[in-house]
Image 1 (cartoon, rainbow, N blue to C red):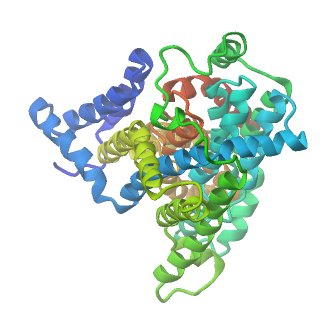
Image 2 (cartoon, rainbow, N blue to C red):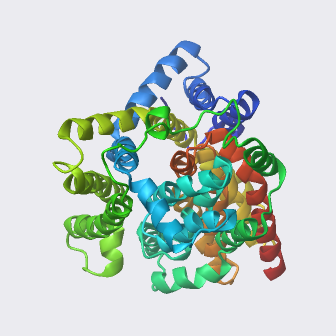
Amino acid sequence: MLKIEHYGILSLLAPLGALVFALWKKQIYLALLFGSWLGCFVLNSWNPFFATTDTIETIIHVFSNTGNTRIIIYSLAVGGTLTLITATGGVRGFIHWLEKRKWVKNATHAQLVPFLVGLLITIESSITSLIAGTIGRPLTDQYKISREKLAYICDSTSAPICILIPFNGWGAFIVGLLSVQGITSPVSILFQSIAFNFYPIVAIMIVFVCIIYNWNIGPMSIAETRAKEEGKLFNDNARPLLGDDILGVKPLKNIKPKAYNLVAPLITMVLVIIIGIYVTGRLNIGNEEINFWNIIKFSSGSTAVLWSVIMSLIVIAMLNIFRDLSLTDYIDFIIKGMAGMIPVVTLLVLAFSLGDVVRELGTGVYIAGIISNVLNIKMATVGLFIISCLMAFSTGTSWGTFAVMIPIAIPMAIELNSAIPMFLGAVLGGGIFGDHCSPISDTTIISSMASGSDHIDHVRTQMPYAIIGGTISISLYFFLA
C-alpha cells in the first residue's frame, strides 16, 4: 500500500463505520471486523477482494507486535487465575471475611469496595480494573448491582487515577514526550498539569456521587432497575465478556473458603508488577542515566503485567496443590479459565487490528490537522481537549493520542505565550475522555471483562456520565481562557 499521511475525510470511515455498526446491531465483534474491512477498502483503492485479504493479514499482523501478544497471553492467563481463585474458595472466603467484620452492610458499601481498590492501585490501568472487578463482582452481585454499574466503577478508576498519580508507565511516557519537545523540567510540568487535567478528576467525583447518592441516569437507570427488581445482573440479550467457563465455576467442596486464596494472588500481582517494571527498566535503560523516571520510561508494562499474572498462578499452586487441590484439577481449571476468556481475546485482537488500520489511514493526524489550524488563544485549551477526545475515541488509544497531540500543544502554548501545564492538562484530559468512551479502547474492554459485563452495554451505560464529565471539563477550560 502507498504510504500517505492521511486520507482526508475518508480517514474517519473505519472508526465511524465500526461505531455505527456496533450501536445499530449491538454486535461488537462484527462491528470491529467491519471497521477494519472498510479501512482496508480505502487503503486498497476500493478493491473489495484485496480489502478482504488485507483485513485477514491485518489480524495476523496483530501477533507480530510483542506488546499485543503479551496482552493476549496475559488475558488468557487471567482467566485461569480467576477460575482458580473461585474454585479454591478465595472469593467466598473474602466475602465471609468482610461480613464477619461487618464492613459491607449495604449496596453502597459493596460499590465503594471496588471504587477504593481502584483508587489505591495506580501501577497499571489494566491491573487496576482487573483487581477492582475481581473483588467487587461477588459483592455487587450479592446486593443486586448491575454488571454495567460495576464496569463503570472499574473503568472510572483505572486510566483516570493512573494519569493523576503518574508514578507509573503513564507518567514516564508523558515525561518522555515532553523531553523530546525540549522541556527542561518535564517532571515538574507534568505534576503542574494535574491541576488542569479536569476530566479524570471530574470522572472520579461523578462515580463517587453515583455510588453515594445512587444516581443512575439514562441506560444505567434501566440496568439498575432491572437488577434490583428482577434480579438480572445483565439484560437477557447480553454477551458477557467472561464466559460461563469462569462465571459458572463453583468452589470445590473439599476446600474450606479462605480469603487468602484471593488476597495472596492479587497482592502478588501488584508486587510483581513493581518488580517487573524495575527489572525491565534496568535491562532496557542502556547508557541512559539510572533514575526513577528513566527506569519507568524504559520498562515494559506488558511484560510486567504478564509476569504478575503468571506468578499469581504459581502462588495459587503453592497454597493449594498437594493440600486440597490436585495437579490435574489445577491444570483443568486453568484451561477452563482460558476458554472463558476467548470472547475477551477475540475482542482485543479485533480492536488491535482496527487500531492498526486507523493508524494507517492517518485518522489521528487528520483530526489534529483540520482543527488545530483554526484554534485561537481563547479556544486553544477547549480545542485541544476536544481534538484529543475525538482522536482517542476514534483510535481507541489515549497513549497514541498523547504522542500526536503533545507535539502540537507544547509549541502552541509557547507561541501563544500561555501556560504549558494548562495546555498539557487539556490534551491529557481529552485523551482520557475519548478513551473512556471508546468501545475499541483496551482499558474499556478490560473493564467489561473484569466486571463480567456485556461490552456494548458497558459503553452505552457509561456514555452519559462521561459526556457530563466532558461537558464540565470543557466549561472549566472555557472559563480559564
